[in-house]
Image (cartoon, rainbow, N blue to C red; front, side, top):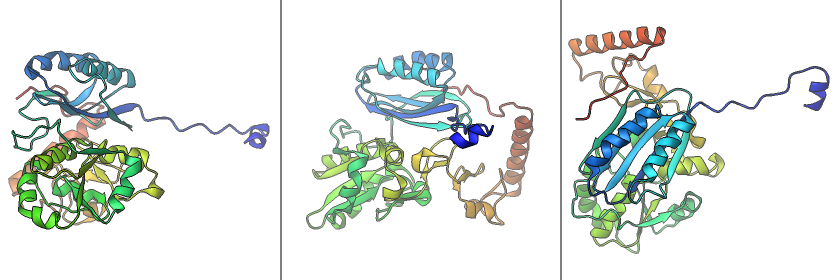
Length: 324
């Protein structure tokens, strides 16, 4: 570098950090009146120019937000002032463009829907740091379970993980009860994981309520693992599906190769996008046979309008989304 500069060459510049900060977060903590927290939190997001989705329930808070670094910091400061959230941990990543169209703050019965009201999410299993995860899942006594949905598993998972083939997290309890005897035969321990940690944490609370004590979950989920564990040491294969416009991320939380079908909202791989059944904005191999001509015409027009808005530098989808 010194010799090149001496000859008048320009020094190499460090790669610029993508401008949008993306934070995934959750905390199981009792909120006496989650509805009372909604409007102040929405106002904090809008004042800071932060978009994304946040869910509030009696059991806590969950969501992903994005914006400028200072804007996200302002919202995190607001959230950390909520009961039990002072030590809130977040999973940070970056995006080149805003990955959310709107700001949504919603009040729900659960921040992640399992449909098992009797369980206590605060009575969860043992946290395992990403640095210790590989050793745990390499133990022959460990039963490794992916608690995510079937389409997420198809994008990527840990080698050797059991896929429950569930369409929603609500299906997980019935799946476990059906397969419990086979899963736990012998001296076994259970390790579970999900995208950001919330589903696997709640799943461990469910297993403990079912009488299983040797149960572990990946702290911070796959996102924290991909952030902290080098690709050369990783047991992860493929990419990790995320619920925003990035669609999927890889090691180091860099943008992945998957797109999103605008008809069925499912991830599409590079192979899917090369299929003759794929038409951007209209259909993918998964849904090509499930839509009629009227549907396809509507999707095509929506895609055309989105392209025109993009060419004008305008957002086709509005920012504010009314609470339902």
